[in-house]
Image (cartoon, rainbow, N blue to C red; front, top):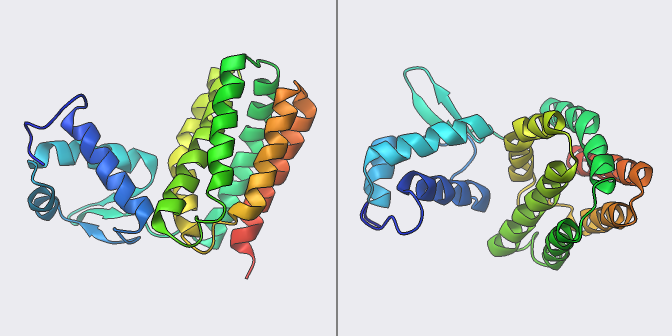
Length: 221
């Protein structure tokens, strides 16, 4: 890849996506140093778009910058962090699900249904191969993100977006073999059904159950 091959997407955006895919695909291990010079040679780009991409990834929580040491992939979540993230999500996402149920549109329903079906299709593969794992986390991210965007509350949505990188870290924590997608898929289905019926209370409760279940599956020995 050269810097002239920007195509339709700025090079920094391309590098952001390349690195994100590597993190979630297990190519870069949690805690691994990210030497900008080495990455520049490996990916055949100058250091400037890589610095931009890494700075953006730092804001997601997937990358950390340490004084005098540079960037590195964020470490796996501790069990304490998993519990803390669960509690933060419980404070935000049930309200988002309820709001989405009150602002249903055909376009929105089509979007979350497509994300749900892709998520369900990953159930047989997510715990066995990288491609299936990628399908799992991308569709999971889209499902939750669409609900947040549809809720009609920009303050709650911004709070969700502030957590989004840590939720990605949580998905990275699960990794192949520990996604729990077979349990999460019917939980997603329940959230979708409640939203599609415009039942705000049920949507909030099913989202609560899903978040608790997702954390419990990681916290269980």
